[in-house]
Image (tube, rainbow, N blue to C red):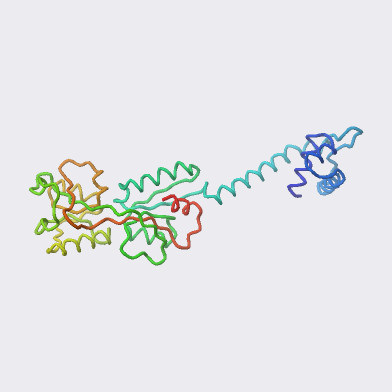
Length: 290
């Protein structure tokens, strides 16, 4: 039994006339009559009484009618569902992001717009460092991720780099350098640093390390924090100074001030990553939106 048989049956049942049904369907009456006979043969029962002025449903036809309508509606729903999935309008998206990227307005704006444009997609979020996010991408555990990339792109990953953001110096509010409008990195020589482990933010850690060496001193990390946002809390507690991405200033914590770096300074790189072999229209919709 084919869908066209069901459509032909419904047309005759609703028009109660083979001639009108054929005109509605855009086919000739003889082919329509033959298709209905084929359907009746397959079912094993007559569906219509042929009467002088049209066609009336038999008991079998009346029983078949609601099921035929439901079958055609289900087929149409399946067609629409498949088309929506192909366009990335339904399904699931597992999205990863680093703790510091979550404060960047590009990231929050992209997520907000994605949810607005594709409300039928279920979004799940995972926060972790860039190295782990890339590993999860490679294992297929997430579909896309906002990461802090290094200077070179990971080989298996398709990366769209976004605008770099400046790094700022984070100081305890009572620090003597807090009175300055801008602070040279060289002024931090000898200061205890609060920083995240290198494994958490590989590119950021190395960039900060290089910036300090370029300024003539070695980085003195006396306190590690599990994530970049945690660094700010420890700076506010007076445990040291730090260099952080500019978007972290959105964390309003009493006891910490941020100062622009005087002269050349490191930047926080940001990008959205998917696997080069990614075929999910949902993940690619987000990638192109960003």
